[in-house]
Image 1 (tube, rainbow, N blue to C red):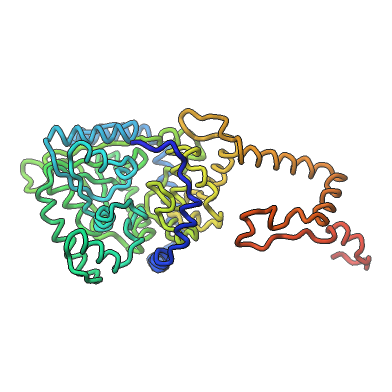
Image 2 (cartoon, rainbow, N blue to C red):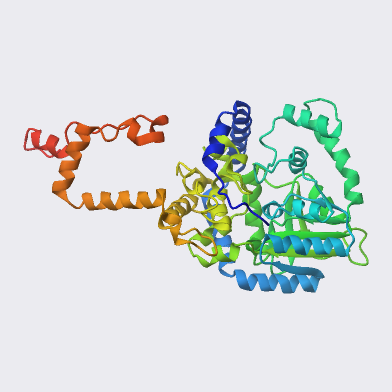
Length: 477
């Protein structure tokens, strides 16, 4: 997995997205619907108790993570699933490519998997002469458009029906009919034969159950079920944080995930995969591989506070409720994971030097934390990352302390002066008096902050002065 040395700049991309009225309309309509569906889906449930349970399950699983991963490996191998460990994205891509080449595979069909997006698997396979086709409808549309997903659950949510109709007409020859049923049927017809022709099927994993060696995949279209059963070989790819102890924890997480993501009581398909096809079975792959991807997760795990990031069950609720994401969309972030979860995860995976705008790309309104089904303290983690940035901690494997220079260094100096001034009463009074006279908080001095806000103006008199002038009535205020 390769990344450019240049930093990913969110602010210019967000400004451009704000000028795209069609994009803003598409997101506003979609997000309003998702928020309403989520609210209705939890009617009659003790949501806060369920969130407490989900948070506890994920927290306890992470506390046991090293042991659970070893247990998962042992149980999967006993079931006939071959397990591979990948230190980073490039390592995972090599492992998957080697498996495909050993099977002389030339065509691969893929179910939706964010971790394969994270490691740019399709590009890697293409360089090896292997064609990878996305089978999730949203991912298929995004692939046709030669774009990346703009949402972790609904990859093509940034496009409306008319745009999809035009895209499919240009790329596949379908009629220009902005009818969702027709477009879905056309995509199904185009994909159906690909499942039969594929040499290998690649999928993600929602939850990996250590006790039984079971891989759980949830989906709505049936493409995941075909991807994992029709081709003769199935490769499941997951981040190491997705493991849970046993099937006992699964019902609570399955109650939270679809309701938080799409407002459904349960997804159409819940696939439980524990082994390859047996001799007395009629369908299923003859070989199953599980690739466990670290790619920086173990480093996140070492920090007790930042480890909360790994609780994420990839529901996307934080994005659906984020006032920033819903106005600029996912592509403005320029990374695999956008929105609130992306703003805390990507700086930890890529480093703050690569994602310098992310910690501040938030209003800190707290909406993401309020809807997270497993109670990830996203606002607190954003504040932590802001502190890391100012302190010069890049979060990379070889941090350079010089990262705090420049704007962050100036900010440090300003706050040190502020702290000193507030500990010197006489100097403080002089500065406050001068602020009112010299108008140091003028729009020109405040810069971009006043583009969308009224500039604050120092009051002519301080509170102390006003209190001294207040007539004494003998009554407490």
